[in-house]
Length: 305
Image (tube, rainbow, N blue to C red; front, side, top):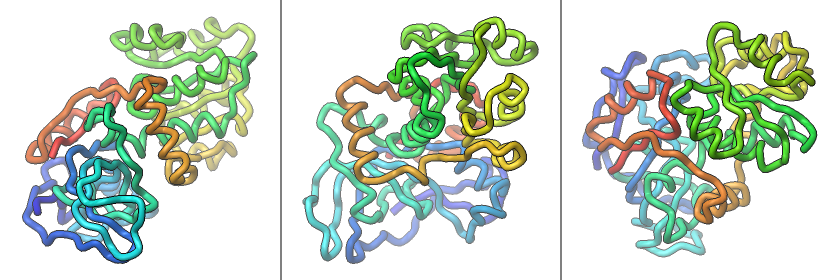
């Protein structure tokens, strides 16, 4: 099969699409023929070596977590699936950016018929992280909360879940994304210089919680705005969180078969929108990550395989 691999830390140019051995369906696992697999900023940081102390790479390294496709092979002891079933799920072994992926059966759920492949291939990292942000800071109907990078892959999910609680939600994003935020009943606000003043003007009664999906100073800004550290969750700035006592709850801490099933149900029913910014064939994985590195995309970038 063909799969994305890299032999050293670096930029997009270290990524190669290579022929590698097909994975096998070990007991309790299944092999999926991948149709779609999203890319994520965390994978970019791992490939650059920025997370070596936390998640070191062993070379040659594969990459990718989210995937959707059809069951190609079942391992012993796997029930509830048949070869040919449409499924979606995730790998914890950096292997979804490939034509075939092996995953534990508990990491996989059925793909609803009406869910587009590119959305199905994006249902773990960003949706679960958005869910984690909201469940961690627990917005209340009479509160005002803010989400950084509110049109990004995680932020676009977090604002929707936060708004479902009845809270007033302020979404920080480039002006080109403000229309989408307004359509989802989110108060849009531009990031950049003067943001503290704009937030204070937009929330004269004060802010109750911050969900940081971008990093780069938002945790410290939240503290400056008077938000209690226990009401701050960041998936992007663990150093600042440790310094001030904020939370760092992300997808891996809250995912379960039940959560993945519920996220999938919400997306399939139209209650949750997973915006798709762009799709690329597997051979153009470098271009996909170059677009992601710009950090201005609205929603998810997905490899179609």
